[in-house]
Image 1 (cartoon, rainbow, N blue to C red):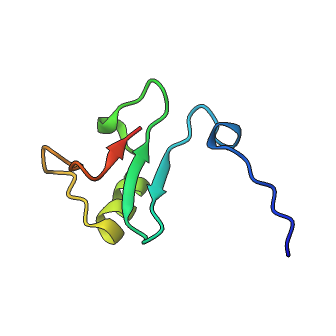
Image 2 (cartoon, rainbow, N blue to C red; image 1 turned 60 degrees about the vertical axis):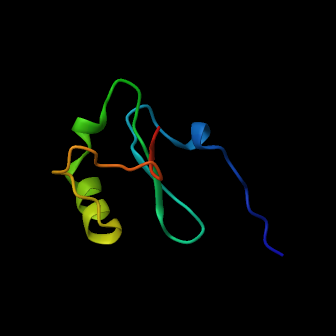
Length: 71
């Protein structure tokens, strides 16, 4: 049995970090947005990952449907 140190997201993320929240099935569940930012400022690298692997269309007005949450 390995010794894993579990930490909370609050302890890991820096104030300007973004994060993808993926469920156990590998589906995109949410996008963590740092305080003071909004979904119009998502970095290009994150947009590319979301487009390529999760089928997100950033040109659509409702980028995230009811299954995906912005945090």
